[in-house]
Image (cartoon, rainbow, N blue to C red):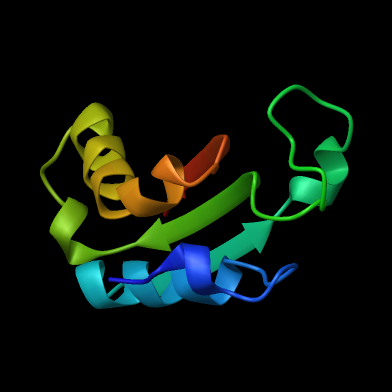
Length: 95
């Protein structure tokens, strides 16, 4: 996928998360918001104010017929690399 360790310091993961979800789910609707700056000083927030808290709003045919837990698991699994590199909080809204 991506080598997050080689990104320039201060680079936002927002476009990479968007690209990952777009590729994985071919969504009808997708919005990825970096809300990290709103959580400055919060446990788990990054010192740079980037890449620790994201909100994803997504609609995809791949989620039809799945439970909410199953849909969440698919999204979390697709973003595991980001979670492994410090993504602390991920809010997911299905549309």
